[in-house]
Amino acid sequence: MTTYRWGALAIAADIAFPELPAGAAGDAPLWQFSLSPGRAPRRPRRWFHHWRLPDGRRWVAFARDGSGYLLRFPRLADFQVELETRTIRCYGAAETPLPTIRHLLLDQLLPLVAGGHESLALHGSVVAFDRGAAAFLAGPGYGKSTLAARLAMRGRPLISDDCCLLRRVAGGFEAVPSYPGVRLTPHAIGALFGEHSALFEQVAHYTTKRRVATDAAVPYCTQAVPLARIYVLGEMDELQRAAAVSMRKQTLRAALFDLVNYTFHLDVGYAPRIREAFGLAADIVERHDVRRLVFPWASGAGDLVADAVIADLA
Image (cartoon, rainbow, N blue to C red; front, side):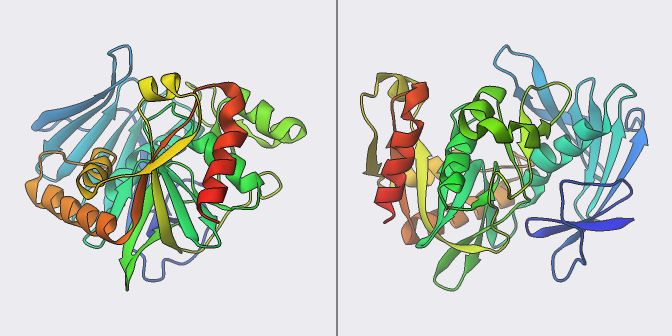
């Protein structure tokens, strides 16, 4: 097995992960990953939560069983997660390509187990400024990865594409890099990178998004960076109504619920971890600015948003 690094975790895997840097585990928690064909073995389990696509179809089903959790991506793969032994066993459908298996682990499952007693994993992209890390929180399809890539091309290296891992340190929190790469739509790639578009490769067989993992297009930060500011992107109706870029500082209460809303949870019903995550979110908003970022939802607004963020952190 080869050991790789993903954020604050180490992964010993029986398949190759070209997306990840290889290296010794050091002091990072070591997880074991293995891949087998077929479905997870039948055993008593209780389904307790689902993620659904905009059209109502199930994207992920969550179940508890005696040894941990099962995450089922219908017609793609099952992932058996055992927290005590830090073991992840993937059972892939015969028609699911290896790149899709890797994507499901790296971009869907690992953010759910990345948080800990002193760290919180949020759905967001992060870039490095001279003043520190700037995080952009939003749901899928709001353009946070595109904004992060645009800022990276303007000299602010990417820290993380879609999982903002904040870890407690003396005096506040720091943003921990996940792994090199950013996932973008073909339209965003063409608009941002032009002749460098060939550097991008397909993420998974079911999506048109592509990933780049080379500094030739997107500079990447490999070290943890003290957190400077968090931007929460406005709701879609706000963006569609907006006539200009605006930022306003959130109240502590509003900022707290923003962070809670965008926290990754493996088990939404496990009260001890929910309380722990709530406490971490409260500490973050007390120590760091959280601002609401609203901008016109139009293809030409990208540079205006980047300009406003750069000016805000100057």
